[in-house]
Amino acid sequence: MNNKQSTNHILMIDPAIFYANPETMDSNHYQDEQSAGPTIDKTAEARAEFQALRDLLVANGVVITEILGRDDCPDHIFPNWLSTMPDGRLTLYKMKDQSRKRELTPQIVDLFSRSYKLDLDFRDNTKENANLESTASICRDHVNKIGYAALSARTDRELAQQWADHYGYKLIAFDTSSHTGKPIYHTDVLMHIGTEVATICAECITDDGERQAVLESLRKTHKVVELTMDQLLAFCGNALEVRGAEDEKILVMSESAYKALSPAQIAVYEAHHDKILYTPLYTVERYGGGSARCMMLELF
Image 1 (cartoon, rainbow, N blue to C red):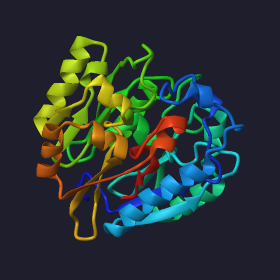
Image 2: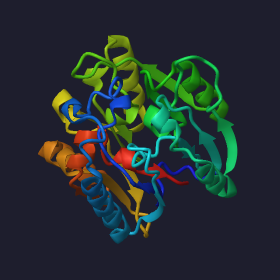
Image 3: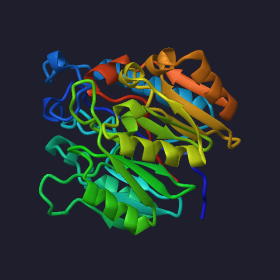
């Protein structure tokens, strides 16, 4: 089994349409509420940002599988509905909102079922109001087999535990509070785990015991970079370690995230990665409420 934390192969979705989706705003508090709805079409701007990120990755030796999104799925740029495991197994997930359920097309399922063994499928789970949205819901430490899950309307504890039990991972679940006082919608907004460095906004974890448990677990396995709530809003938590053509470790994030980091935090990342890549994603962040990591799905 490949025990690497990161991969050289990434799936990205070129959006056919992009705007601030009103359907997702009840749980995603990072979208611009004043700009909701298809009347403010930001497709051209989002596609330009997508292409810049894609081209930056390719130029640095990352392999990209690219799929064109559906024209009735404004969040298709964020592939949160499947995941692959280092041992070649495939999981399909249960999305909260109808427009997001449409994103996992039969064609996409067929494409990935050819290369991976479909091993776990949450789509038909009958538990009401219980959802699980791939790597966005469970931040995975593949080397140490630990899954971290911030509970929300999109991340159900019971489904997350089913995932962990199935794959033999320890689940560490916790409650959070965003700048609005409501739960943070996705775990990958507040944390990311690389080979040597883990990053987390521990301040947003509401229970003192849960916060300590998360930090203690991360510190046993990684150098930990802690983010402030302001850095959380700048999407500093929404980054991803990928591998270059020569297996070098590359940390990828948005320009807003990089600019919000302190010199000391950047120094930690530089000490444990071969390079840091960043690009402007201001449209995607403002209208979609997600950033660089949300746009990249690892293919092991």
